[in-house]
Structures are given as C-alpha cells and as structure tokens.
Image 1 (cartoon, rainbow, N blue to C red):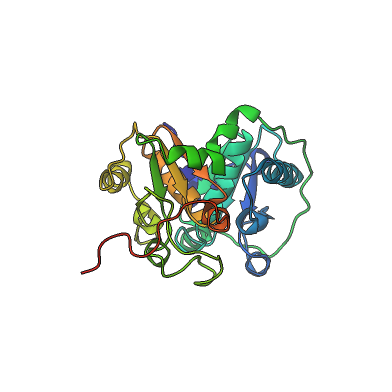
Image 2 (image 1 turned 135 degrees about the vertical axis):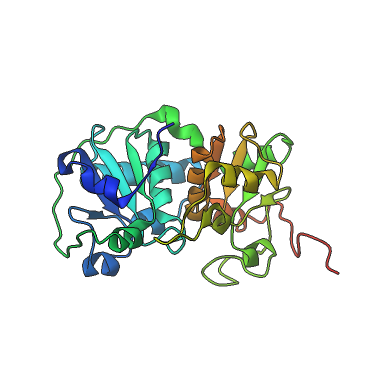
Length: 285
C-alpha cells in the first residue's frame, strides 16, 4: 500500500505542475510564511457540519467549490499540511478526509507538517498566488465514509462496530464539553458504548517533530480497546478533525473499514433526545 504521508524531501521533488499544495493554517500564519505555491484553506479546519441532509449537502458543495477554486481537477495531487501533526487538531488530516469523502483519489499529507518542512531547511515564502480554478467532480460512491447521526444511533445496537472516541482526556471523562471551553456544548459525556484512544496516542516524538506511529504501533494501540484490522470503526471527536488524524493513522495501519461521524460531539450533545454517558467512564476509587 502506498502511504498517504510524504516527507518534506518527497514533496520538494514533486513537480509544481502536478500538485496543488493546501495550507490549512490560520490566515495570519499563512501570511507569515508558507510553502511556495500553497493555497490557504483554513475553512478545512473551522467549518462545523451537521449530519442531516441539508448539512451534508451544504458541506459537500462548499468543499467541492473550495477545492475546485484551489485548482484540483482530478489529475493533480492534493498535498495538505498543517503546522505540526499534534498542534493543529488534525486539520491537515481533516482535509484528507474531506477529499476522500468527495471521492478525490490523489491525496497526500505532509508528514510532520510545516514544522517538519522548516526543520528540513526547505524554502519558505510570503508570496501569495492566484490559482487557476478547475472543475471539481464529486464521486457519490465515496460518501459512505461520512456517518450521520442516524448511522451512529443504529451503531448503538451493533456490537460488532467499535465506536471510537478520540477526544482529549478532559472531554472523555466529562469535565469539558469541547476544546473551546468546558461549557461550549450543553452536555458533557460520551456516546454510550464508545471506547477511547486519545488521538495523541497515534503519534510519537521524533527529531523532526511529532510523527505518526508505525502500523504495528498503531495496531497495538487499537488492540488495547479490542480493535483489529477487521473491526468496523466509527470515529468521533468534537467536529471531525482529531478523528481525521486517527482515520489516517488507522487506514495507514491497514484497518479496513474506518468511517467518521463528522458532526461528532458538537452535534450529538446538542440533541437532548440522544443518549449520553455522563460522569467518569469508570468507577471512582
């Protein structure tokens, strides 16, 4: 299997005519310095989606338009990056997931992000470009990667499916509702029956910054909650970014059926008709 992850050296060797480089960082970070030829698409990280039909239609059209405006035409390889793998909440991987959901086939993620690019002493620019827009075609057959709230409700009664929560520990133990503050959402807790692997555990420190663990290391993390390469895995976090980081890690490790509930806790917690587990996920001493 060819890896989605590429190194700074591998990116530097790619022809500018064959790639569209997408910077997912905030506009001010992009303006301060970025990879030459990159297009800034911070909405990849900030956009909040709901999983009803209207929400999915809006999300699909928004990002088909955005990726087409960036120059992705089906032949060019999208190369996506964030600041580093553990500081952008998985935003480059969120871009990878969104492109995968839309059916785009040629996608790479810069392993280690912009920090690895700088550490490798690769050139940085402040020059902005105006990309030539292209027609972006959507493949509806890829849409099954995106889970709806109804899919998740059905999964509550499906013991063969692993509901995998990858949020930070304070969210998992129900002391915070989100990365944006403890009370950003009306309820704190977990989707019933979920198991937990904090998204940071898919990465490890290296001399060039945090990098994804090897396939064997990722599968060892999965084994701790009973997940194998054959287990259907339904991921969620707060809005699908950290889940996308884990999505990429699991796909790289050979887990065959991995999908994301993109509405995640931001959507689930706001619907008072949906069940949650509150309090500590284990008996306190």
